[in-house]
Length: 306
Image (cartoon, rainbow, N blue to C red; front, side, top):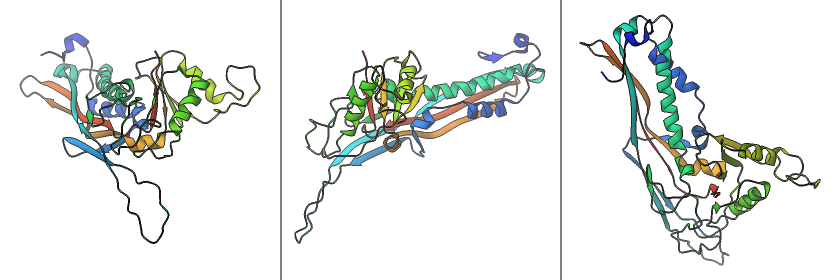
């Protein structure tokens, strides 16, 4: 049987503790995805999210209330996808292991689950500069980080609708991105409160060192001036190995992110096993079903560095 582990291959192995080892390993693995997403559950095959535009400013009351109107916003439809893997073990191998070497098998399966979820969790960032429809469809049909965002209200998008930058990470580029974010506008091009507080960067290259210097140096960065560092202590740096481009980086308002970026668990990671009656081969598998989506872009500024 393909994928079956045989005692003749491994000698004296295997202690039947797969289930315990699997869950212990799965819970122990660190996940940056869980820090970025708001996780929700679903009892349906899809999740549909819609938005309604904002109200305008108050008008002077002169005896009669002026009633405002709101526009229908954009819709997003997330469709859960199924993911699974497994392995099988010969009975004699199951019985005779004295050294727990096969403990690594369920641990490896747990690692596979975590790695798969982290890879998918990174998709909105890896594909931030293009339209990605793998898990969801957004009716705006614009990349998460773009200088071409639109609105349904008819308001001008000349100012405050651009969350795309192109500069490499530096103190100057960080300040430019911060200013760009605090100037974001809402559905009716009204002022909104955006407070970027997190820098998300890849693990490759030297960007982590640059980010550390920017937020921890007491003096002004890369100059001989004795000015105090404006950025000292203002940002949290998050380093994610699952970001694939060594040059791109992101500035995030973490509070708004939690309202706009969602991980949807239809079936959380589920571990099961069964032994075949005739062959005495035990099969172990993991199954999960999930998806993700964002319902707005105003929590992030992405720098696509060529």
